[in-house]
Image 1: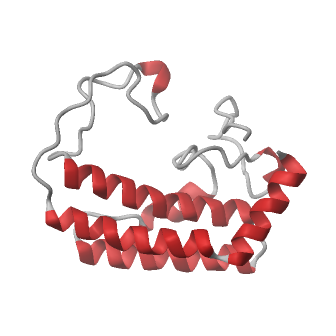
Image 2: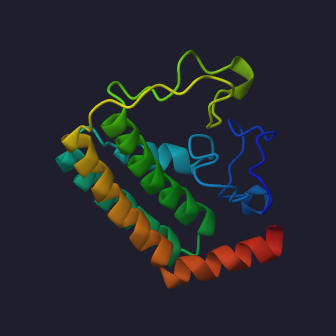
Length: 163
């Protein structure tokens, strides 16, 4: 699978106007880079409490469906990534008090990319049931998005056309 292209100037690039430049990549790659979608989705993304996660995941899932209705695969995929990120971030906070999974700062050349980047993993703390419930709510909406037949069709078309 073609990897997400981190070399593009996402601060100046409108991927709605240039969907041919978008690569799905793996997992959440690019979720906090791709405009205008980051600007549209980020204000709705919250996971601190189950109620915030419920409202957030429902709002983002509604946007996912709206992007699909508009035939906008990139927007739908970015909304799917925000749902996935809601799950993974809430799980991280459920497993690690304070949300830090690795010791030390992210290296400057790796900012915006997930991974340990040579840093040691911190031990898990007792599970936070509030964050675990927030994660469960996001996971349910993420699963719904992944199972959507129109999304799967548009994803297949996008990959066939652009890689």
